[in-house]
View 1 (cartoon, one colour):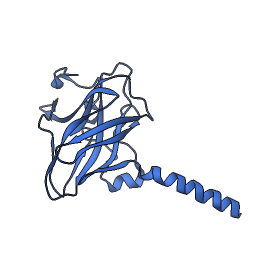
View 2: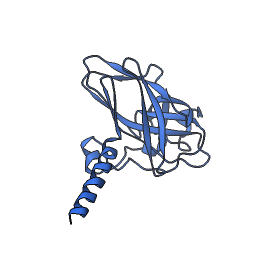
View 3: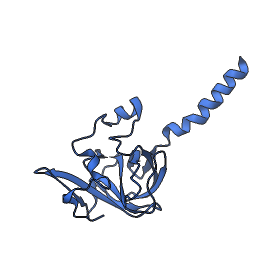
View 4: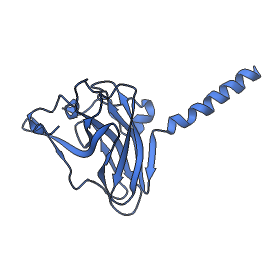
Length: 187
């Protein structure tokens, strides 16, 4: 019985770091649960989602990033106006007011991984370097969920961070192949 208890304790200790490995920090910015979705074989772009909390006293901005998995990483917003989905790059970055949390999620603000070098496969970890105006850069990994997944399932822990079980209307539309006419074929 003692051997089993030790083995169980070792497994728990080894597994514990992975439970928290999905959260990152740079300067005053906390980055929670970065994720993406698998993409179809011919996709040229993919979306990235995460939560940013500015714990500092001054504003910051997410300016974009880079990834070895894509040609470039941009910060985008998505809106539906009169039934037409429109996406655009936030050329000045995404504002992160002090003391506030900003969610990048399907159907809203998100990262665009443009010119993918290969399709994103479910279960993959996509490396991305995020660039902030003041906090600097930080390397994160986007955990890839299933193709068309409305949100990553973080279980009860994810619910504490505001991850919805259902995505907003048009949530799948910021993925390749779902751009509609509002994106202007930019990707």
